[in-house]
Amino acid sequence: MTWNLDPKNVGTGLPLEGVRVLDFSRVLAGPLCAMIVGDLGADVIKVESPDGDPVRALAPPRFGDDATYYLSVNRHRRNIVADLRDSVQFAKVAELVSQADAVVENYLPNQIRSLGIERLRDINPECVWVSVTPATSGGPVADLPSFDLLAQARSGLMGVTGEADGPPMKVGAPIADVVTGLYATIGLLAGLFARETGRGGRRFEAPLLESTMSALINQAQGYLATGNNPRRLGNDHPSIAPYGPVTTSDGLMLLAVGTDSQYARLVEVLGDEAISSNATWSNNATRVRDREDLGTELNRVFSARTTDEWLTRLVESGVPHAPILDVAGAFDQPQIKGGDFVGTMDSPGGDVRTMRSPLSIDGVRPPIRSGPRRLGEDTGQILAD
Image 1 (tube, rainbow, N blue to C red):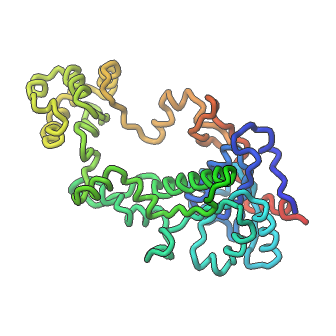
Image 2 (image 1 turned 90 degrees about the vertical axis):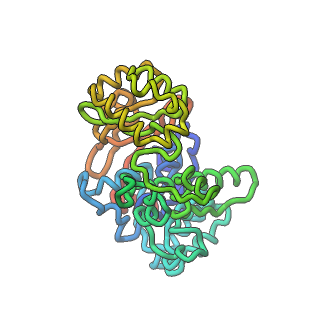
Image 3 (image 1 turned 60 degrees about the horizontal axis):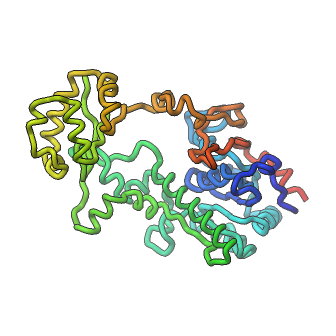
């Protein structure tokens, strides 16, 4: 059995054309990694169990028979079904592993043992093997099933998200899975580079817990350096003010005043005596200390005009600001609506709009060559003798 490239992945001119990737992963982090390298030209084959990726059923919403959740991270790959507990099907998948340049998987340790995944890994020592795991192997929670919400809870991310007097809150999108998927992609690309340059690095682990904790960035470093445990501040920033929403006459908008010079320009635009006369607020440290009083004064001034009026007044000022949009509003803004970030892909339910890769290569965004496939749609073609 020879791994023949999908004709859609030949002649693309994309940087990963000709790279063969086998995707055993399910749900989000692993499939996101496989989708990203597929966007960049790799030839990806997704291997699903007879039950299929559970994300196929995570609905509503649906498009056709598939959950839109599945559609979001499963383009640019052919799809086969294989039961690794069956010796004949295992052997066929092993042939694919022997020809793969990289593998992405997120099996739990008990699944690795029961399905013989180590035997697959040993078949091709030069293959870059990327494992998405609950936590770094060997630790006390490394063998426990995990997913985005649990990672947000255990990582401390929920501990710094929410209002100061309210309960911890999760981020509104699956940020733990996304960050982990990006680290998995970095590992896969680093492994391919290492192989080409003769360096070590064939096995990479992208742990959900530690990857999510890495997203704490300044919050984590502040704690590690000082021992001060960060607290929830709602939309406020722990080190900058004003840096959050202000109330207008018809809603909210966002200020992100990161420097003293930006604050001086804001004061000039506002033209308010009470704010401009408080010289102590010209210093960021004092503004952070007095963030509640400063916020009260800013809300008083901003509530006199509509959001659109303030956006117009601030646009020439050099003061960082933005409207606060819902998802529909984000896609409707001119930057997105007038660009090529949203495209169309085929799917089992028909053509559907989707986000394209955010990357541009030499000024050109990679095209969508193929959308998600039906469960096992390519099994007969790929696994045929």
